[in-house]
Length: 425
Image (cartoon, rainbow, N blue to C red; front, side, top):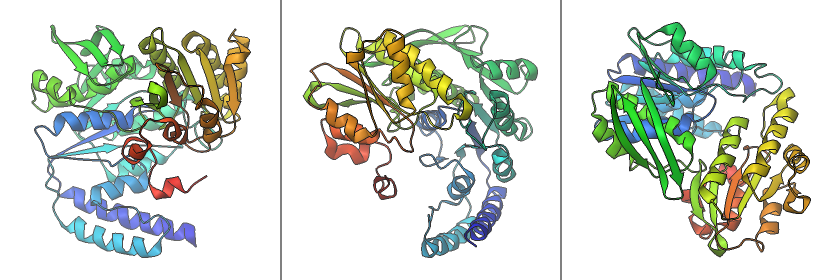
């Protein structure tokens, strides 16, 4: 019965969302990819919102329900029948009202084959940002290969309206191939190589932020952003491209980028106890993102003590062992101390030891709070602490809250601080 009601509510939401979109006169920008969707969405929003009226996906509401709720300007009723009744009435009212936004900026998230079919049956974008394909959602019942992930996400590109534009990260192997297949018509590329339409060079980073040179049309521009991590250039360049396609000057786009700040849990810099620093990347974790985070820790910490606090990487299925081992080979080159949280993360610890990291600098715990309790009296002035792990059964934001200098600001600075999350184990 519960499953039937869920399907019924979703069908109602879809019908109302499609009805409202029929009268929407603005541009629709869709964002998909294995990593970086939310950060990219917020960067695009920061740029475009300086000259346009923009509505965006809230937080990570990028699934079937989340997409419809965003279009209808309503919230989720979760498991409350009373709340759903009210929100459905509100959604019916809103679908009759014209959406006066000029741009609709939507994330398209998928967990398994077929998920994108529903999303594109609701929305046909004018532009699609495809951030890349990497090993996520590969557990049982999800995807069996990177090619399968690519094909599912590619459906969003295929669903674009006539004269749509695909914005592709060609440093990603799958998207590089897609760009060559599509040709220049209806395609704009970005990356670190000169073959891309927009490309970045001279990338430098420290705790003060990220600097790089942006190249386009035989011109170059100096960009500075209050972000850490070289990979953030792949977050910022789609924002530049969207602004350019919509008639903004690159100079004004760069001014907007200087004001951009990351959503919570995406490599945020937070003061910790004992005058240490936390790199808070607790929103989620995939192998590629964790590897990049470790390299960022190594580069920006310099001679300071580097502590990597790493949790399980979920939804890797048969690739769980090898992917955690891969991270274990990276850790000794990037960190002085390793703390792992969760059973799968112990594979990282074992591999790091095998790769030469001293056993006296490796520690493993079951929970985030146990790890925080252990490290609390060992933190020294100047330490740089990376915290990164998957959501379920890890929840490293609890570790960060226990060690941040101003825990009273956790509600504003950390991920998953809503009651629906804080009451979960």
